[in-house]
Image (cartoon, rainbow over all chains, first blue to last red; front, side, top):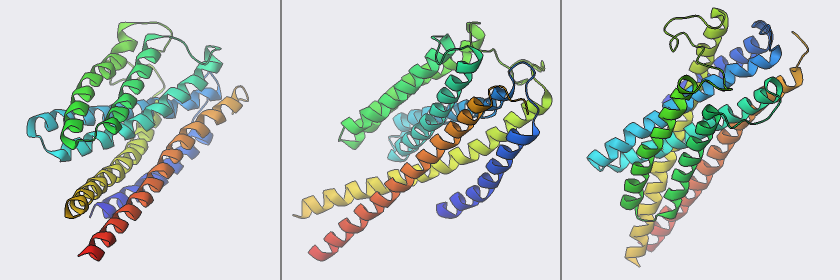
Length: 230
Length: 49
């Protein structure tokens, strides 16, 4: 059943991603001051939004694990976290390339950039922590606690562009500016459409990763069974 | 299209697609490895029965 869902989502996501790439490359207009480099933004911002969805899913699953003590929620949390890290890496690296042209530097210790990096490192640490604990219950409990604490850094990253008006551009989406149009509606729509495509891809990654986590648990169970039978 | 910064625009788009493609490949390799491990374990247990 899950394989069919993954294939179905893939059948929608891939054409949409290719269509969006074509529109971004050839149809949307250049930004007046920035030129073509602005097109990076159509991946930079949606990738951040997908990563934020992943971190949020991990937070909810971690809380659910601590409440219900069901390993299913731990599997969801790790699948969501790993997927979020992939999209957060896209966000960070595309931002650096944009910054190299617009700011003249690859990296600035601006609050938004710094907190985005801190969040990435915290969740990377989450994956490292998991690989260091053998006992599944201890691993799930400690990971859930770290994930919940880590979500605070995501919240700060989200609000950083409002709290500290420094180098990173402020909010541009009308849903965050209270309906004030900061960019051309065509550009804003393209951001939403590419967010949808990347979100579908993110869901596919998460479902595949979740299935792998379940297979890994089956392997661990069979190993324990084989060890006990000896 | 304006010619300014066009190289860096391509770098940006290539990195975005490249990182996601890399993650998809890593997922595929892990899937293959896990399936192999699971099959081996199941076979071992069957043989011992």
